[in-house]
Every structure is written in structure tokens, then in C-alpha cells.
Image (cartoon, rainbow, N blue to C red; front, side, top):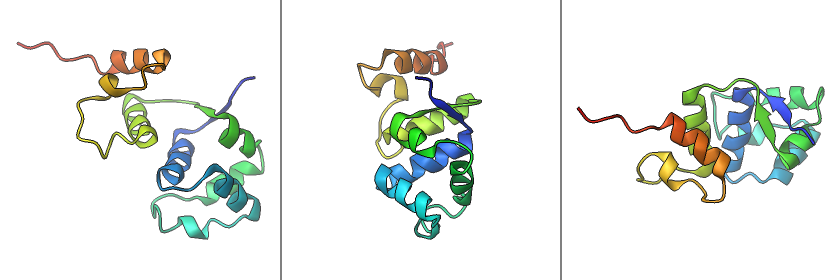
Amino acid sequence: METIRISLPTAFMIETLRANGITDEQILNQIKKKDISPWRKIETTFDFQELINLSTVIDFQSIIKNGYSVKFMTINGLKNLLRLKFDYCHLNLPPLPYYLPPNDKKLTTVCQTIYQPKPSI
């Protein structure tokens, strides 16, 4: 089964909600009720109404339950999404590739490519 492709800002919105303790069920319930008012105080720069709009054109439940892929990813976008998703922002750790889940070989390879140590001069 192929995952649904979403934009990077949409992924940031979903992962921001999750990082702030909003469960997948709560996300789906609020989208179903078309009520994003509880989320406005979580992140004021996001327009969470976009999640409701998205839910009218694609299977939003599949995005939340089965995962998603991002349509276009930048290096900094990947860094920020990984920090948000795996909570590396709040830890005082070296760069990401050294602390990724050991069983996630694909993600580790991507990060190692991006985070190659700079050669010392």
C-alpha cells in the first residue's frame, strides 16, 4: 500500500500536534468535528484549518493511521521534521545520525548522507 503524499507544512502541523501530546484519535476527532480551536494556542503560526480542508479531498485517516510521505523535502525541512518527530530539539545531543533508532536503516542512511562531518583542515 502506497502512502499518501502531503506537503512539508502539513507534515509539520501533524507532527507539532503529536509533539504536544495530541493523540492520533484526538486529531481525527477534531478534524471530524471540524474544530481546530484547541490547537490555535499550540502553534499560532500554523493555519490548522488546512488540515480540515485536506480531509475533504483525501483520506486523512489514512495519513494519521498509516503514515505519509512528503511531496518535496529540503535538507533543512528534513532536519526540522526529524527533530520534531523524534524530539531531538530538547536533548543536548550531537547531530542526529548518531542517535536515530538503530533498526531504521533507511532513515539512518539518509541522515548520514546529509550530516556528513566536515573534514578538518
